[in-house]
Image (cartoon, rainbow, N blue to C red; front, top):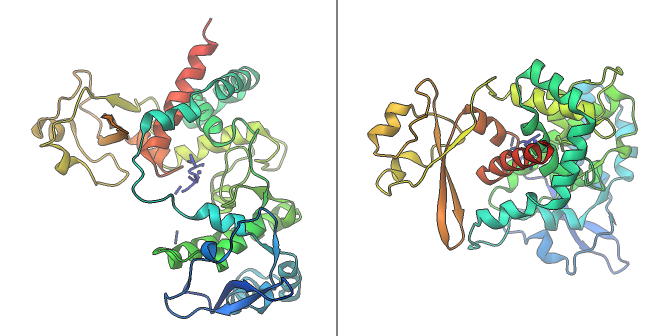
Length: 376
């Protein structure tokens, strides 16, 4: 949920949440090479990424305890959740600012054309396909059990875990507390800065709560640059809400238990609208330009009946069930014609893992391709 969320396990999953500006954020270094706080006023601050060149993968010292927003956060955790203030102050002396995280969280340059074929090729490739077959063969019983319990097909679970981390091979090496603290208190200067800082502050809270509940060192948590954890890349909040102990060992461990990861992905999708036994997507041969304005921009929901679609003049498939609702999925493909599909509630459940049509289709196609490779 890239997420995503969520990520969305759940980027996929996929993804997808949102502190007033803190009074201080990370700024320039002193002449001795140590960072110092800088007061932020209104929206006239520079991008943190722009202030630091070149970007380094190495963590940087920052005295987070000097920042008013961090002190407020500590007070909140003590008042609302019973944490000891002195323990949290000591914790923040060990948290690092991560310049690389700031760089990675920035959106891609504007104007770059979307390309479904190039996106697809990143995931439907030999390494993931071979790893997917091995994973499915090894964990076939757990995948079958997840399908029986939650109604989510094995190929969808396999697709998400393959897209997210190549079946546990690439779960991320950032310390989660470093990544989340950087984004919660020093998010780059973007139009959505305030809601994103609020979101990551919430995820930092969830990470600390999870570590306390699980009786683990919070610094032992590693993950993506955005703080996503484990095989399915769940954000801490999703981990606490949707993850399950599917291997029955009495604990939830998405970092070391692929079986917990399988059950947790299925649990996430089940709680985000997955409909047992229903189709996921139907391809369209084309989409008349006249119909597009009335069908696009409707969010990540299946809101149109078959009758609604027919009234727009959309060339719908003959086998499209009349009992379901749909949403138009349009995938721009560089200089090639766009790919159009009709997504059901199950398609849009995948987008709750990562709020992207491209992500959802990559999950679907990877799962199908792995399934075909397993067939004798």
